[in-house]
Length: 316
Image 1 (cartoon, helix red, strand yellow):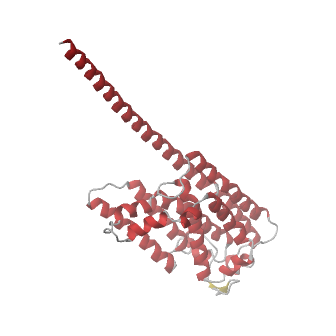
Image 2 (image 1 turned 90 degrees about the horizontal axis):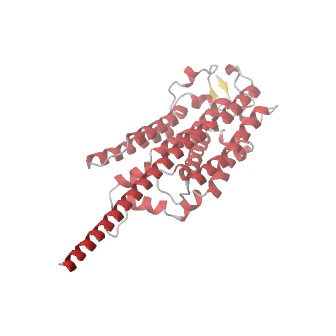
Image 3 (image 1 turned 60 degrees about the horizontal axis):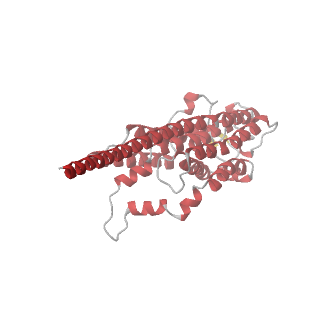
């Protein structure tokens, strides 16, 4: 039995994808994923029972997003991620840049607002508390680009290049807390940009694209820094277990390559989603304009007919 640098027993053979995908659930994330899917399913069923529609695409997106969290936290990827920088970076990229996008495209907040019952007059139920939270000063701060973009960048540089990372990696609890942080940062960063659920900040589509691309170059630079480093930069991964048969510097370079390459994937995914939303928004606006023009045309026709009728009356 090998021991990693943080005192945790590890018995890991050289990493392969097959070994990495074997079942090895983290209890916290297992319960959270099951509860998340169950609550979302309850909301969809509640809408269906009262005859309201809910897009299948949103359900699929949300469930796939939760499954991506389960993939990196409830398989042996999580075990290997404790001792291999490259596997840890896969976890980080998926849970902070892929899972949040898919979950947000599932519009869970909108579903909750539609599914939760309205409390009686003068009372506050879960729906009213959720609405109050969405409109709170706290939400205005944490979803503002002046907060989300620096937080997104600091989660890389201030964490990996300080002793805080080694401290958190010293225990399973610290590792789970770190992954929860990555997920939360991803949700907070992408929420104002994707804009499916209601929120305090809803800039125009062009501004959302600028917000997206404002943070991504720093992500790429972080990956390049790891790729070009000539010595291991993170204490936790300096001495990988001998049973893995890996070189710490090569594994770090691989982690940098993963971080650099992964910065492109969410950018393209979000850009496609934004362009689609922009197109649909323009289509809705065009339909509203057409309906307004039709109403105005009908009013003009009615006025003209009334004018003709008045002339006819005066002539008679």
